[in-house]
Image 1: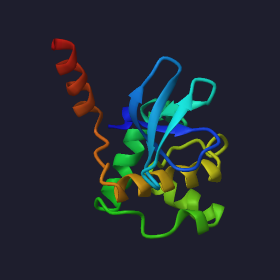
Image 2: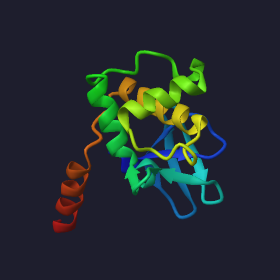
Image 3: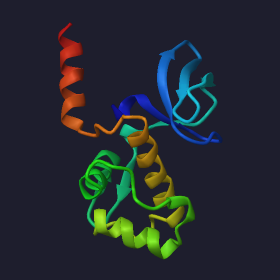
Length: 143
């Protein structure tokens, strides 16, 4: 599921990939559900490709989202990450990923991830398991 969810530099929120053309993507905003083109010159990142620095290795964003989902029992985060102080953000993030690299993961990064999580839960896109995605990819290869 995270493979089809995109972050586009310069645009707020997240986008769901609808279609792909020769030089662009057609995406739908998860905020207002409007469709728009995103061109190859725009910096586009799939959430599947995002990883978080830790003291040992990088941890996929899906693992972090699953940890948050478990902590929040599948609900949105109880506080508004946009209004939280940096110390609050770091404390919360440490409760879901205790060994994150405190020097390379900034409060703005944490705020963005927590807002993304809330948006995905609100939109009913809270299945963050990687195994199901791998199974779907295997099924598509067989076709």
